[in-house]
Image (cartoon, rainbow, N blue to C red; front, side, top):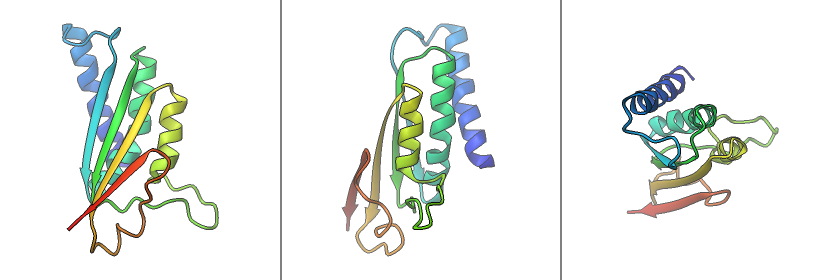
Length: 130
């Protein structure tokens, strides 16, 4: 979670800098694009909620588009334990802040770890190649 906290803090610091220098107008919608490869995608998934909260706190209407490449994004397990890297959980949390959310997951067909875990439901578009 430390890496996700650092990513969220960095994105929000850049937003604050842009607001301060006038290059970002809080009255216009903002799209934050997060891209992560492998476990970097899990970091981006976890950071999305904090970024959404930060946008709301700053009065910015926006959207977060998350693209993950070969990221093992597991759903909640059968025991009902909430997984902080489940894109469906993050989608609900982000949208609860009034921020739009979309997730595109890309992986290779032969990836036995990732290909079996991601499901194109709940706002996730899944694309396999190879």
